[in-house]
Length: 97
Image 1 (cartoon, rainbow, N blue to C red):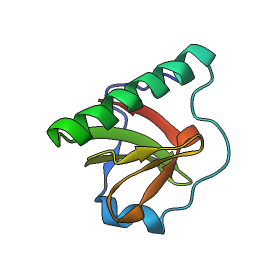
Image 2 (image 1 turned 30 degrees about the vertical axis):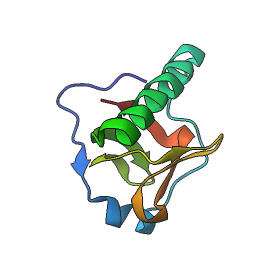
Image 3 (image 1 turned 60 degrees about the horizontal axis):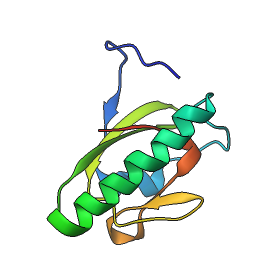
């Protein structure tokens, strides 16, 4: 999945995420990108737990790409867990910065 720099990515607050609808399809086509996503998420989890640093997560719901700046609290085999039990399905995450 390549994202053009001028793509319109809507900034959202983490509190809004629970109201979004997520399709079941994978946003990253290449296996290597999916592996790198897990590595980046684990790094974000460590940064969040040890240093309370926020990361930017770019993800896609049924309306298009969104960006949230938040702390990653946990990762399961299916989703990323943010504060207040907010979750984003793994397959909908395009990038972690």
